[in-house]
Length: 352
Image (cartoon, rainbow, N blue to C red; front, top):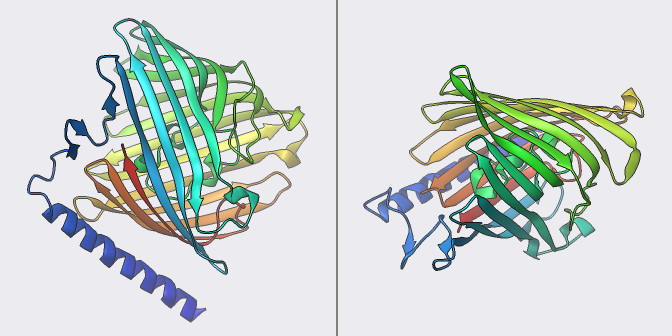
């Protein structure tokens, strides 16, 4: 046991030294640290404008290394995402994203390791007024915060919190009304959605909606603090007779590059209390240098059938000019689901 703890501490210290060295090398490589990375007329991270069409091509790529305890390490091209969006002079807008998942891997031990081309999003927006936008198509399910951030370069850890991955499908196909309305001294962000069609190319091992309706509200109470509320009622294709009700709360607090966030969700089932699921996480981000951050997260999740999982994540995140992100973390826990394993995780993401 003592040897195991020593090995973990030594791994974390090596990782810290590596990222600090990387930080210094990258900052020294350019005198103007805030200057964007350019390739000719193209600025990395802002997408490539396609002439005068109003369309822009962008995306991101993520390389991932995982070394689970008691297992064998695996290196993969975890995501290669391409996005195309269009904004004309009128009220209509268009967005689509396709994602090649695990396109290349050093080993494929289970069907979960197989490559898959996912249609992540495809929708049309109509901007009716300054506070009302109508959306139709396939979009990220508006529950909580993490699921809607979506892109690897924009989240703090390589691993995903259990409560954002186990309770509801990550995408929905239908219609949505969204916008911001004035409320006292603040603006209230809202999203109201209704499932109106079967999912096209859903993520493998995810049970898509067969019907759903719900809303997400986000209130910035102060410049530093935001509070969110999620409500949803839905059924899924694999269990059409199980009607689920979901309520969730989320928050985000930021102050001088410190960040504290969390989500909690309770999902009931018409099949009885034994089929209810609930859980949550709290995550703290602390700046170490100008671009290097320490990240720690505690999670708890109760599965249907009364089994429970706990997880603790500790790691580092290095962000370079908003386009390149290096992450490394250690995951520890009990009774974790198949998508989350104890051990070491690292990733490098670049935003096109």
